[in-house]
Length: 296
Image: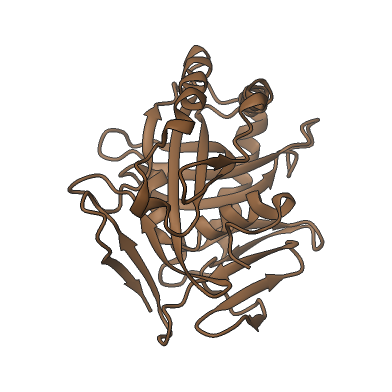
């Protein structure tokens, strides 16, 4: 099953994991800054002893050097929609904007100083060859979000991407990049206005820092992600694209899927047909697929 066809109740988490298995997608969230770590689906009440029961979809520690010696802790609430190859959209959640704003307020009430909404658009194979982004069906939704989010100084980013299809599996990566910067795959609509961090959030990120720094040093450690396993009730540091602690299952020719029972959803590993490597593509302005990066 492709990500586009995945069941709605699993799609958001599966999409976040998909993004963090592909450097050209998650690297863009840093917006040119150096990241120390990214964390995914972290409970707000982890080591805080507070009353907050929600999860933070994405949390990052970023360096603002040379502009500042201080570290930035940025959070994102993620929403996932589908763009069909005929230019139509599904799962827009346009009638749930008030709920989305309420969720962003919860991040700020918890103490996050930098809060953004990340709208991820999973595109059906063929969408980008036949449509511009954003298509007309998104214009009113995006305008409405900009109006509401700007009132409360939340950030807003868009991340569309598309996979090719080989039978029932995803292959390759198609993303819309900024001219001259192929790794800038997000559309940055609004910058978040920083406010003061609160004690509950500070305790959480201090715990995350301590966990990460005390994890064994290894090459490319910052290219792994921190996740929280609810069954074993602890943090883990894993590489989304490939982690030896998780079992592989064959899924047709030319690809595999990774099933993690502890995290209750499936993520895909995108193998170029006939080759054992992941390959990313960038359309650019000409919509011609050219290799962007090969990760062996």
